[in-house]
Amino acid sequence: MNTPDKSMEFMQIAMKYFPQAKEQLDKAGVELSFDVIQPFMELFTKVMQEAYELGREEALKEVKQD
Image: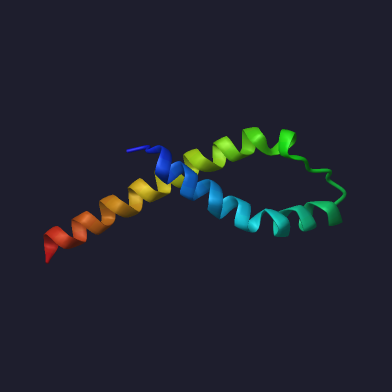
């Protein structure tokens, strides 16, 4: 269930932590730009979608057990 709304929520979460990640990468001497991170953001979205689905399935299992 990969909806555009859920992907947008994941992207908002990522952007919330972007300044912190950029600061850490700057300290490590890694230059970061939005062009460079685009493929990583797509990967992040896939990871978050999979984690969301896993959590959703677990929650449904718990509800059925009750």
